[in-house]
Amino acid sequence: MSSIRAIRGMNDILPDETPIWQFVEGVVHQLFSSYGYGQIRLPIVEQTELFQRSIGEVTDIVEKEMYTFRDRNDDSLTLRPEGTAGCVRAAIQNSLLVTPQRLWYCGPMFRYERPQKGRQRQFHQIGVEAFGIATPDMDAEVILLTARLWKLLGVADSVTLQLNSIGSLEARAVYREALVAYLEQHRDALDEDSQRRLTSNPLRILDSKDAGTQALLDGAPVLLDYLDEAAAADFTRLRELLDAAGVAYEINPRLVRGLDYYNNTVFEWVTDQLGAQGTVCAGGRYDGLVGQMGGKPTPGVGFAMGVERLVLLLEAAGVRPEIPAEADLYLVSFGEPAQCASLAAGENLRDAFPGLRIVQHNGGGSFKSQMKKADRSGARFALIWGEDELAAGTVTLKALRDTDKESLGQQSLPQAELEQTLRALLAQ
RNA sequence: GUGGCCGUAGCUCAUCGGGUAGAGCACCGGAUUGUGGCUCCGGAGGUGGAGGGUUCGAGACCCUUCGGCCACCCCA
Image (cartoon, rainbow, N blue to C red; front, side, top):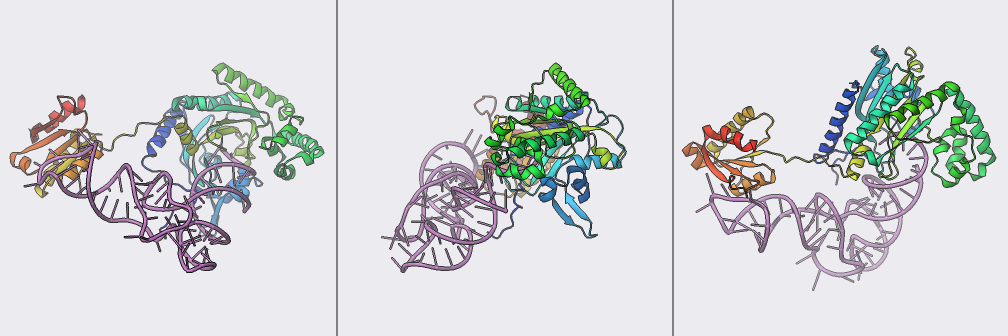
């Protein structure tokens, strides 16, 4: 019981789970590449100030969820809680802000929260950032990218797209005043959390889960009505493009995002199959962020998705990539000279059959136990070397699967014919 | 940070105040001295999360603590 355990909320991903992760990662890699996006790999640790300046000082992420520490030089560093900030930093620092710049990244993120279904302290995000294009065709592109991803992953029926425009910073400030003014009149009808948010972050009241608060919001001013002409036109154009591409969406005027840097387009892909954490993918436009971080003012749009949530969603939808048996061939030997022959033959076979999974039996044991391991390995064939084979210069080839086929069974053949015989059998 | 539920074998769970804590699966060995799967037989594996209390007696009741799950907050 005194053995060391993993940090709470930081989970091991075990061999029987990695195939589904690899499936997701493989699909993502190929898909992003097909849209012309290049991968960027970013540090996990950044200066604390990077996140304070980009995400927003008063967000929960910055206020209480960051893993922040001082290094030996007494610099304040933080384990990245999200990917966009670091990507923007890297784009500025490495002069990547040519137009257009299409990037994607993946990797672990860290937030100090209580773990629950679909949420852990170390979690993984896959994200996309497209810099340099301010027009809504780029918004449409990244959304199309996600829509195609759900199809490729087999979860398109499990997610719906929620879309909104939160306009410019200025428009939001005006709206914020109107919203607060309305809600102040009904302060007593608000739930406790929302009363608190009235001063700290009124826009977040819009996505309150409290039924009474939501009812109250039916009479509240609507953010979409406060958009300036340009933002409204962009939103209309985005909708036209999505309509043309056949991507269904639901306008959610109460959709606001948690991070301060968004403007205009915001969107979320949500599901009802993951318990309380319904957001699988979320993103939006952030035209002010690059300038705010000290780069040449450059518009941007992007999204991030939670890989753990995606994996849960695939499992809920019954998408299960086939977990391959651990071996194709299992090499059994009895006696030390025979093991030498087996080892050498195994190396030759790996030369002859690249990609074939050849597992050597190690650790000795009876023939019976070795054969049992051979069976459990899932291998199609066992190759057996013992005293008899060694004396005769042969090897025994035994089929472990499909043994009802008459052509398959056990045969003893000269070493020299092994490769040729195997080639024929494996081709079936 | 707050709340609810839960910690018994590697895993899934019994036992619900009384003798040495059980089962299935998994694991190891044997039946078959060189042959897997099916069957049968056997074996190993637990300080009952930890600490304290009540009691003649606690895995079970009480308290504390640690851990897990779920939810709130917040978010991917």
